[in-house]
Image 1 (cartoon, helix red, strand yellow):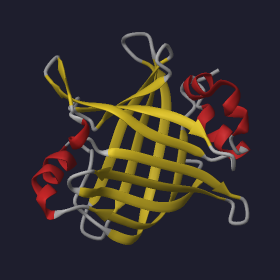
Image 2 (image 1 turned 180 degrees about the horizontal axis):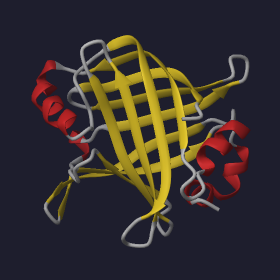
Image 3 (image 1 turned 45 degrees about the vertical axis):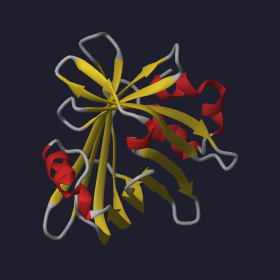
Length: 203
């Protein structure tokens, strides 16, 4: 049993079989995929300084576009605390820049949440809840969020949170994985949205 299958328990079997394969992620057996984001939209110009800093950490970025080549790699390893940890490396190939949106995830099985540390520098943290829809898609939503300053984790007030919704599915007719991501703030509106398709690659 791996972290996502253990977390979802009996719900894991309700995922589409291709999503069960994608999220099984045995130790040191990576999943690689390539595809195209049909569209990517960033948010308000008020966020430009934030995007500039975040992009240096391989977190969020300012670019928007259509038909953007995309790749994703996931690998499960054991971290220094002895926990199973899944790395997420997402790469977006814009005409003017290559952007990355990286993260590492572990699971708090007592609280039944995924602990998501975003970017290559420990700066931003979010609780995530994983669920399965009636159609067999994976639904991910965010909860509490924190800014990390040194060894301190400072809670972000509700009104400043980026509310994350991810829906990942499988289109049998096209034989592709599908993804839709929305990050929204109650004050600033859209922070980032993207949607697209991808297929597993040998790499």
